[in-house]
Length: 429
Figure 1: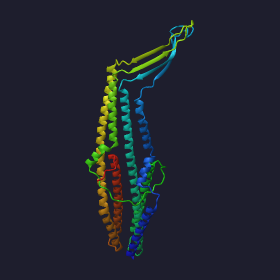
Figure 2: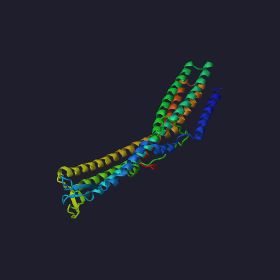
Figure 3: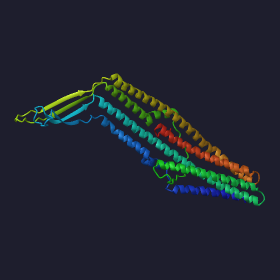
Figure 4: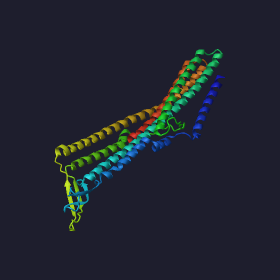
């Protein structure tokens, strides 16, 4: 009787899991990892504002490399104030003028060059933000994936505990069981309910975070596919990842462009030792005098230039300032490179640990724990194992399954972080 009950219960659980898998495969309303990343890249407002900033900065070089706008003027020269008659005095002139400021040769090119490098740095920052957006989306997606499977494990254990309770009640009714065994199973069932509530709360929070990255309403429901490959790839070694990041990481490229911009500003500051010029031209119209004598018009040409007489206090200090800013950018690049390598090493270690844990739980611990539970259940049926040990073995199996899914999710999260840290998808052997 008891053996038949165990077989029937096992078949029920298998049918339930199979039904869940079929439902997941046929339901088309789930959010795959690919669709989540595509939606984020398309709709994320933070990435969009960084793109807009990069586009704005791309319009600066043309402005910085263009001559200042010319100035047009209108003047009345030598106008008698007693009559304001333009024909009274021979030297009275009325006419337009134009002037054009001309920076010392090379200054406009350096200004444009500095702005170009800054625009390139801003574009690289967009790429950097794109990688970390993808990483965050993947990381939260895998967190929800883990929570979904953890909830399923808890629910399966709740059903199994319910079967334990039925078995215990049957034994109790025939005088072979103890009432405290029923109470113990009910207590553990309540603990599982508490664990379920915590997992559901964590899932709700993770869904809100993911929806924010996808630019969707925070409480919009998200369903993930339940069936997914559980194989983890092999990745490159740490030195190979360092080498890849050195040439691929957008953050480092951005710092290189900032250094180039700082160099251009140093050269521009040195150009300020030389004068800037201004060319002027004006035309003076003269009216005929009262006697009818024709008066010739006047053309006035002129040129002025700045005189940098405060070199030690102004231009030289500006060069010192720009040199210090250049050194700052170089130190920032070195600091970021050190951080990138440390980041890669940490993520690499996390992946290796989680990957090994996944294999250990899947191939060793969980099968052993399941065999232990099955053996304990059979022993309990024939009164050779007490109920407390049976429950403990089931709790151990529950924890092992939760740890397996957590390690599997952490390994995939590490892969997402590693691609962002390297700045490239090709991190696999």
